Amino acid sequence: MDFSKTKSGTAAVWAGEVKPFAEGATTPPVFNSVTFAYDNIDDWFDSAVGKKEGHIYSRNTNPTVAVFEEKMRVLEHAEAATSFATGMAAVSNTLFTLLSPGDRVVSIKDSYGGTSKIFMDHLPRFNVDVMLCETTDHEQLESEVQKGCKVLYLESPTNPTLKILDLHRLIQCAKEAGTVTIVDNTFATPINQNPILLDADLVLHSATKFLGGHSDAMGGIICGRKELVEEVFRYREINGASLSAAAAYYLIRGIKTLELRILRQNENALKIAQFLSKHPKIDEVYYPGLESHPAHTIARQQMTGFGGVLGFSLKGGFDEVKAFLTNLQFAHRAASLGSVSTLVGPPKTTSHVEMTEAQRKKLGIPETLVRYSTGIENAEDLLNDLDNALAMI
Ligand SMILES: *Cc1c(COP(=O)(O)O)cnc(C)c1O
Image 1 (cartoon, protein in one colour):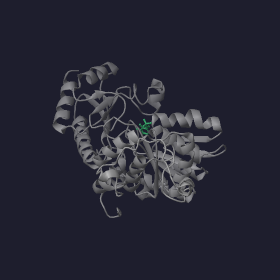
Image 2 (cartoon, helix red, strand yellow):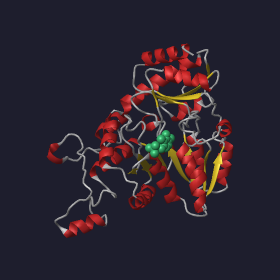
Image 3 (cartoon, helix red, strand yellow):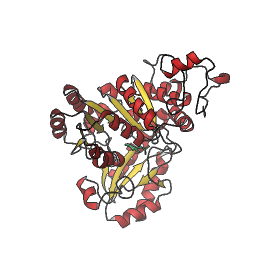
Image 4 (cartoon, protein in one colour):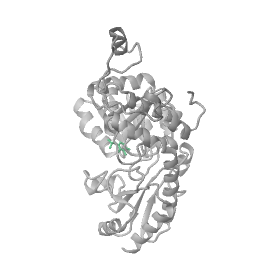
């Protein structure tokens, strides 16, 4: 099946599902099999050395997992894709594959909390030189790339203040310098943004978030240039952070409704951002879909929708935040994002819990910031819920 002309809603349903499944099943079977048997020893050998298609052992490859990888490969317009047990496994396996002692990596200060730990605590132990730039300082990012580095690692929009990077500009700069560009596309999803169409070498996701979309499975994926993806796959199959068939099934099922969910979440988030930006108890709203966002024009150029996550700070102090959060009815006060149900939390207790108040301040994260990940509920109900919760403080 050729997906080069299909739209993402169609690809999300059909990609990876072109082979006849056992017994004519119309949904991918969950192959909970660790190992795959061969009666013909020559076939076994040919599969093992990659001369023939076929699975050997589920730490390496698995038919259910392969369906998930193929869906994401198509949705991200990539040559290849490989998956992981979690999003952090995707991040760490990719960085530890591409970087060796003596190499240099350039990234931003606002990367995802776990990623930032890899940059600050773990890569330096292996003598990798890490340069973290001010997140939206494009001149600094460009000049650091031009000084020479193996990898440029980007994220846009960022967590939790929804900063936007000009991906086209930074990727072109990296290309000229012969640097590999990786983009964490978790917040945008392939429905809203396709970094590979902007020439990124690799795109990665925490599939735990929007891709699965129901907060019931963890996973990670990288998509991109074949030789790079293969290199990372070779490391992951030995490192062992492989996605299970059971989790892959939930992710496959989630992806089938990805476009429907994201379009709704884009809509909900924009309505909520517009509502809150006029609310007297709100200090500031962070959402790239608002015209007042400092990089709204860039967001419009590189995104087709602005995503389901927004941030906002309340007037007052953390006591007001606590009261507001407990007053919400249609929101889980929980970590994570991208689920069908609304998830809400302060970065102070979730993504940036390991930092001090001073460190958060340096990143431009106010203590009264709330991250709000809209679910697929009806906007009217979410708006009423927010309005009531704010009225009660
Ligand atoms: C959650 C997240 C990750 C890590 O994914 P896990 O599945 O939790 O390991 C990486 N990047 C971003 C942007 C995330 O939101």
